[in-house]
Length: 179
View 1 (tube, rainbow, N blue to C red):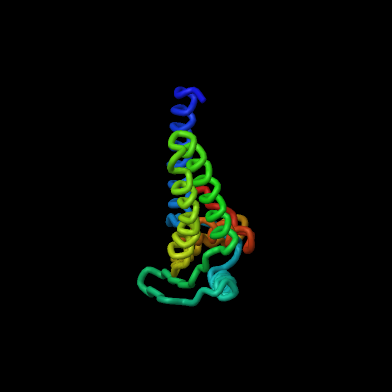
View 2 (spheres, rainbow, N blue to C red):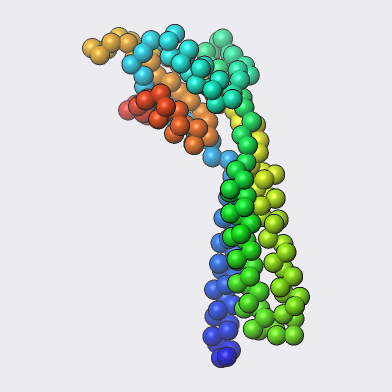
């Protein structure tokens, strides 16, 4: 095979391996966000709904700050077995591609290169160790002055973005229009 073709193929494979590395590393990245949501209910009933919701999601009340009105929920988020297996398979495919290119460049070391595929379970292990962690949800409910639509409450929630999306969907809350 032509040296230019092998060199360019090797360069592209290394770039793909770098992308795979950062993809695996991003699988355990913290994605905490803050959002303000509006509910058409009084503060008391809304707090009860939120308490029930977080109890169902296996969160417990960790702290209540009476001066600021902030409630902190805490719960353990388990890692996904599917994602751990998926990342392991993805790493195996990526390493196998790199091994094939390296074996074309250095045929004498082919057996040694194929041993690198045994490193692929490290990706799943890395995800499993990093993704299982205690998550905290910070919640503050405030009542807005009476509008023509009735009582409105603004909920300020700081949590993982997936948890925020689930909360919004389950309790039918709308994002606040104010910044």
